[in-house]
Length: 102
Length: 494
Image 1 (tube, chains in turn green, blue):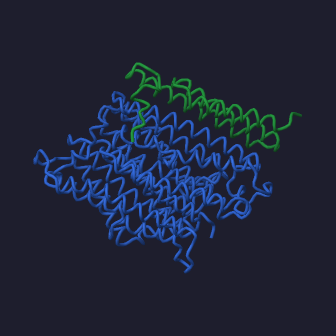
Image 2 (cartoon, rainbow over the protein chains, first blue to last red):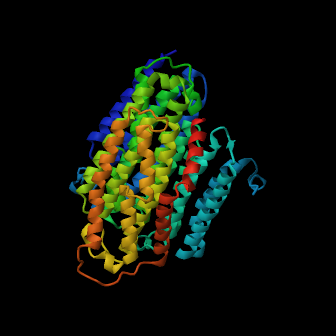
Image 3 (cartoon, each protein chain N blue to C red):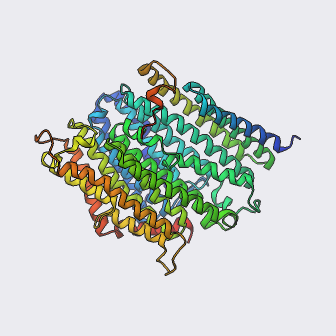
């Protein structure tokens, strides 16, 4: 059996890649994809821990996470589409969008 | 009244079931009737019926659980009551507001009702799974509600920021929950609190706690996770801003109470491992949240952004509960959440009413308002002074309870959180400066026009309700505070 640490390290690496992408990427679609990576990192943890603990709560949680992530992306893409129609760009570095006004 | 005869085994879910039915049929109501007002009336009826059912359950002292994941007791009943009041006020004014005239109203009310169902579901959750799903139901509905003003570039920008930051906070939270599940082998909060699998502090537990605090910190806009809040409240329609600032934020605070207070106060096993560290973590977050919120609010010229920063600061005050971690602090925090609904909700309603009358969102647009709309000016002054904490208004009473819990006067022992109370009182003084600026613009400065302002009647009614509660809760706090004490006892099991 593969030791549980391997799964945790895989999850941690995925989470780090996702977080890095959210912070650095400027395309909104890519940012949404990176958020998906972070969610899937948690899913890997859940499945690994569920198998390790020998119960089904972990897997039940993963099903919930997947459906929530799907709903979130559906709404997220719709919002991005609307913003694209108004601004003709998906670039988050666009001056008016990143201006973190006080 | 015996509700079990109607709802059977699902009585604990009764207020939720009613609103859920409403959320599901509202889009159809608009499609069939094609009437804005009819859809609004149906939404309002569902909100009121649910409110009445919950009020009956709460005053009867009903307790019950369903499915092993959800529990209705004095605490969840009180939180559900708060969310229902927010929903009632938001729905009440939505039909008259000019900001929502171009929206697809069926979907709008359905989203608002659905978001409230999520909050109510969170309030009764005893398991991390249901808390997670409830929070997401509210969040995803809120993303859509904020962006519903489709032609407004500010709303589009707010929506993009909200959905990306919200998604990231979800990912952080779920990662933290997965770690906690791995360590304890369960997602039930009471079982985590008494876990025997965790024997000492380790790095996984630290990651779990920090990730969950950060993730839910985004939802309540605690510093340093607050940057989305002003943009979102500014971009959304005023009833939606009011709904988010008073409802959605309270849900995030309720999550903190239900997870961390239950784990670290009611539980003994976990609190021995990291109780003190978590208290200090929250104390620092609370101090930064109220200070940054108040200082940045001074620089605002847009009244919605100013109210947004002030609501960040108010969340900082309520976070004192998480640092003090006592039953008295929790009941004071719950009471402050109630008074905050009426004062902040009322202030947002006035902004919304004035937008309907063609007045802008700048503080300079409010010049000479006392002559043009005397009632609105008086109401606004009451709400702002209540937020600043001036007696005898509700905000003073609730802040007094909250800060005294940090000083620890209950059993005559001064607690270690006196410095936190000191920072909070200092912050209240700072906040008076920017609230007084609005009052000065309304009463002392002369405006360009002296024409009387006409606002929709329904707005006046909603604002009057808020004014009444702000005054009544100030002079007679027992009206709600008794329930808050029972609720705090029910949550912490004392």
